[in-house]
Length: 131
Image 1 (spheres, rainbow, N blue to C red):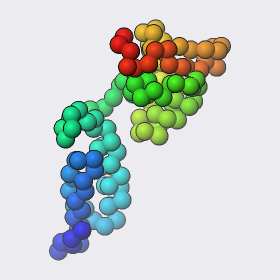
Image 2 (spheres, rainbow, N blue to C red):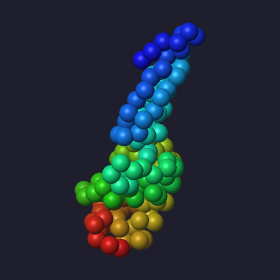
Image 3 (cartoon, rainbow, N blue to C red):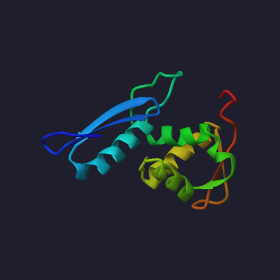
């Protein structure tokens, strides 16, 4: 870090191969770093050393990402899915998540077990199996 005449500080970060430089007042640094880290986490590596441009995932894409990672290997309730997406920085309404889950059930990627309003979702076919 280096100080400038205006009491601003400059920080250079390298997060997962993405280099970022932040210049701000000291009291803004924590918020700036948090924002940068959340943004960089949304960048998907393509090939070694390459990165795609960041874009926001739709609710269905975010849920499908969990499926691709094998997160649905054990039964998951809607609340658990909402918590996991929120933890990863995706803030979707529970009804949107429910619609995305229903789509994946109809596509044959997930199965749902139980009764209405108490469904649990589990992986029907692993991601590595072509659909």
